[in-house]
Image (cartoon, rainbow, N blue to C red; front, side):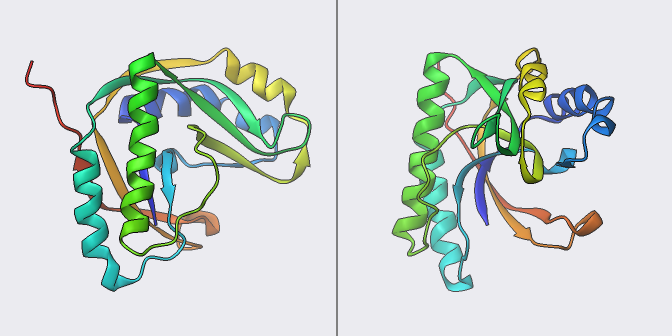
Length: 189
């Protein structure tokens, strides 16, 4: 499972259209449009007995955060453009949005840990994975291409808890299922 921010349908469609005409140029494992998300917390194993508490705690964590605008823009590669294993699209956020997103990730990780669920300890780096590479590959031209991309703005207004079923999607990809969504608190002003 994972806790995530899911871009709006419009944002996903725009990025998918931008990449669609370019995908044949590289033999990457391109992410399907319905799989695009920003992972806040990766939870490798969630025992059924811990799920209710996790949902309760994620709801509380989301209730402490406020909606903010975001857009998919720019790009990069992990671990780097010279030996990439992952190609990603970044997020364009105002300073307040950066802080809210960082706090959402911290809150989601804390909710899982307090529920007795092990959380991936890697540093939070907000991004949307657009492709995976079978072996380390030089992708500087792809990073430059993504650096020129800027999609439509959308309101980040919830945290999604998503179950991942490995190998059950098309072409052996994971199948994602949103288990629950937790709204952020809208300011009364």
